[in-house]
Image 1 (spheres, rainbow, N blue to C red):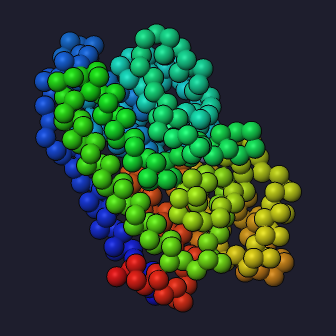
Image 2 (cartoon, rainbow, N blue to C red):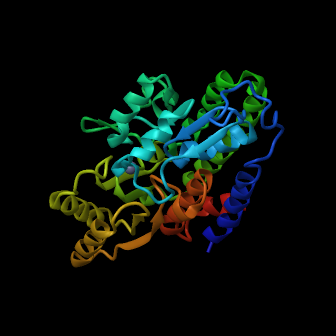
Length: 327
Ligand SMILES: [Zn+2]
């Protein structure tokens, strides 16, 4: 099976991704002129990130010259996150808050407004890195799942380094150097994923998932994308939406649909049953990590895991170009 050859190749890339979280040169603790922590010691700027997709990058770029915390757990659905009093306290105590924006953290918006009013630097990362014309909209709602396009997300390291450097000018150069490393890795991964999907047969390039989180991914990597639920999981999927997708699956003979780690499996199962009742043997192609890395590990490992899961389920032995990528 050709796809199996691709996986070690992607795994090697991830290995290079996961190393160096604390690596790289640094000014060391206390060398920054950033804000000290409450006990008087100076550990660099205190940074709170909402998602791991932001936080994993900030942890590496900040290293030992910043205190970085990630608010959402690695299996948490960000659309449904409601802040506790302790969460708000943590945000209030930060120097910098990095959040996604575009209504991803719907229940957190009001608290973030108060945090910003109190003088904390609050930065909507996804909104900032999108260029004119790049925002996707679903119905009336902006699509917040910008991290799915590694080329767009490769602009995030520079943004983080800029924010950290402003709070801690003595470490600006260190932050910038580390950001360049992360950026280069994301650009390399993006190119590899583009090549891999380009070799998928055109009629197999349909991605069906639990919710509409793969719009940017599909646009970048050439897949037609359908989610059973919309861009947020706060509203339920309608029976109508499932029926329409059953029709699509049967008509286009789509081989697989995917679970998502932070979304209930119920709708996907309903789609599978509906398609099978109509004679199309729809398989579950695996679990994708859309809104949190979960078992995949880090943001970059989550992207890689998604790519190999999708290629594994949608690729066929006839995809000659895929074998080329696998080598
Ligand atoms: Zn989502």
